[in-house]
Picture 1: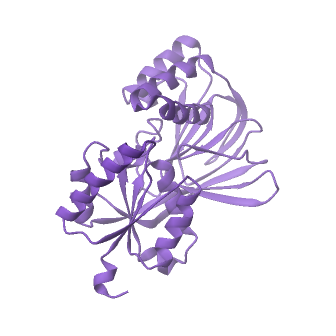
Picture 2: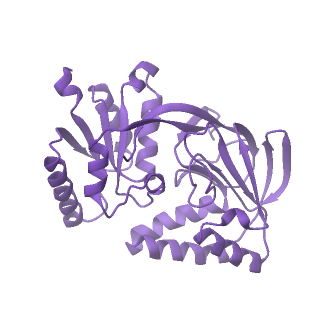
Picture 3: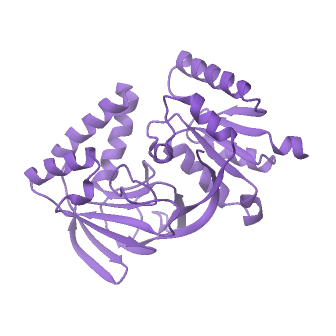
Length: 311
């Protein structure tokens, strides 16, 4: 590509349900892009499965700026596509986001709002790039094959992975992020469980029944509120099984951003860890993965992706 083509954005539009809603949203985005004089080509995903294929197509066609109009899961697919490329290719690509998903936690960490596309596009147009960290989960799947998955926001193990999946389903049914969140919190009370886990965290081994674990490269849906994706470290919150009164208190602290103050929450800061739990669900950036078999490893990969951040 020549210099003019290098500045052309590749935009992947991951629409929400509803033809009229997605058409109106794209028309608003198109107006803002044209207002800023941005040259772009847009492709639209037909399904979750098509996101990785389309991101790979944009990378292979030489786009240096790739913007995902979507949520945490679509961003997750995008970074995993990037990490399959050679370092030389990755270093030439800058990834951006316009939040438009069921969960937009990573976008909100930077201050991008799903209610203000004009400000988001203005920030992206300034093309301020920062190298950010990724977390990486290495595991063996049910077929016995070695697998790995990178994450921007967090890995959840146990009850919260189940709740994140319920929240996603509720958002599709209810159409409201706030209603989905509240319904998930209610379900969390009635679905309270614990799981036998063995965790190796730094030089400490935790072997006991645990309700949920969050390994955050960023805020982790409020469970790792001090994590930042440029520290070279992962934050870990291990939650032991609280009593009902403590659980309600914990939910309130989660909503108010003081989750780490709860007596059942045990925080760590690590570069890598090992985990083994036979029954606990595992979610990466809000999406469940197949049950890992046996022990799995989680580590940090410092400064591996170029990300477009606000002014």
